[in-house]
Each structure stands twice: as structure tokens, then as C-alpha cells.
Amino acid sequence: MQVSDSVWQGCFGYWQPLFIQTNLLPLGHAAWQGYVTQGQGLVSCNVEVIDAKILDWSRDVVRYNIRFIPAGEMPIYLRSHLVKANFTERLMATVQTYHPDQDILIAICSDGQININLLQNLAISPPDCYRQVRNRWEEFALELSQ
Image (cartoon, rainbow, N blue to C red; front, side):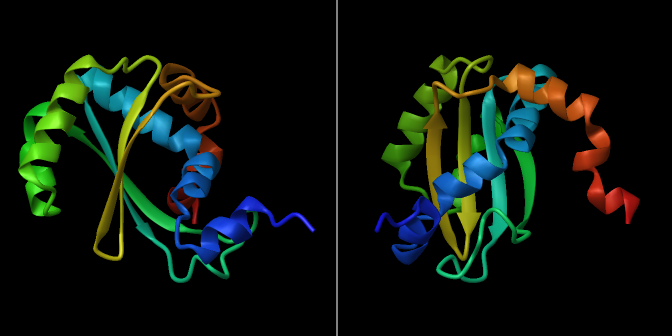
């Protein structure tokens, strides 16, 4: 029997790839909008995961909020999450060289932990994510319509 990724990753507490896969359009939208308005930076996503072991990513609603951290504000943001100075330096070098039209530098925060990744070779680019979210805004602005 093949165990699905959602079960396997949830059992080991590593749910972030499934969160990214499920929410790529809004994450890419935030990355591109942030880049266009503020330059290169980091997408910060605070996620409320109650129990990843029982979460069904295809059905359950996971609450989260996204904000863009411009490169100049990243050291303060990273320090507030207790990221070590040598890792902060590497991230600052990365933010200067990544390709915002193709990649997303993302920090996922949950339960006092931070997970930072450079997403590359995406199925859909950040500019395309931005366009799709803008064209289908009603689907993404659920809290405004309730």
C-alpha cells in the first residue's frame, strides 16, 4: 500500500510542502506584488496548523496570513524569529541574487518555528500567480464576502 504524501509528511511533522502546493497562487501573488511595489524580499506566511497528523489538505481550511518583507527589513524580521546571524547573512545574499519573476523566497512560521525556503522551478511563475489571483479575485477574497 502506498502512503500518500499528506499522511507521510503529516506523521513526521513536515507539512510545509503540502501547504505551499495548496496555496501556491496566493503565495506567488504576494511575492510578485511585493517585488513590484517594494523590490526584492521575502514572503512571510504565518500558518495556524492545529495538528498536521490529522489534517486533510484537500478538504480542511488552514488559516494563514501573508505579508511581504522587503530586503531592507529582513534582518530585523529574521532576528525577531531568532534566526542565527550567519544564516541571515546567507539569506541576504540569496535575496540579492534570486529571480523574482521565477522564484519565491518564503518563510513559513507556525507554532514558534520558522521554515525558510527558496522555491525554484515552479509550475507557475509569480507574475502568472499574480495575474490569476487578480483575474479570479472573488475566489481568493473569501473573508471580504462573508
